[in-house]
Image (cartoon, rainbow, N blue to C red; front, side, top):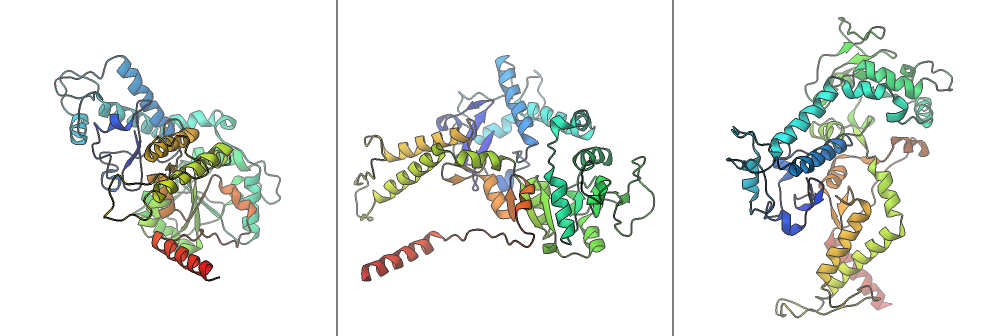
Length: 428
């Protein structure tokens, strides 16, 4: 399993549940690089939602388990991987593709396919949903602020819609659990909180060609045969498409704020298909990350890392192309460097590793590795208008609040302003 940055350079590599050193994964990826935009979904599968966490963890555990049983030993067609062998990324790809294996040896590729199929199956046949419904308090977080937020939205003149891929039977039980015991007047049933309710949305297909829009009989859960010509409050629908939604609601893209927790199905696809809805991405990890960043250890490590980067940059001051390659000046700022005999590059690396472990011992922070932003982080910045750990945070903002990012400067702009500032200071 790989964690990469926006350009596809590998930030972390984990085999099973063993974190590989750079010298180890170099055998598999000599360039330390993959091509996420071109190869994602083909050679690589992207885990970028909370649904992917248990699946990835299961796969990693099974790799360790079957390797312990020696079931990944090489067969006649090299269907498995030995990290002690020198193997290029091309060899890795060819050796993990499915093929005729007369020895019936287990390959990492076939194991991944099996796990993928099992996870898909428990979603498709409702095994997972039924497990959740059997103990809703255990699996679904109930928050008394939810009906308050919906009520305030409606009082301010906003309309609320629910678009989910879940079937009606599951949606009904979960939403009733979350909303039906609200003490707010005027809401006798969970459906009263919504102006439009769409189940079986089939996202991301909903944002492209979509499916047939049908109304759900709320008594027996079956689909009605009559054609849907408009959305009616209190009704529940199945399927549909973005084009029909836009037609029936007469809304323009920026008039709709869409909240979702799946960065691909909910966020990226909407932007790529010119949906133009404003998007709010829920990333549950943000809460834990903020708690980590608020600790004194994170602050100390981050300051140390930035200081080391500054020291490295300063070591080249007043040098140009005529300078000797080994002629670098050692700089020490406030004794931040514990051991001047240790190269700055090595100290930066060790500080990055310590910071990563502080967030997660396997993959570090969800959003970065040291000072380098992750591929997921870049996707969030590129596609999501805003993001947070919980959309209930909207309770604490007026509904006309304007969310805007802090302005940032490119390096040449920042340097130009610094030069201008220094000139002004010298003239004073």
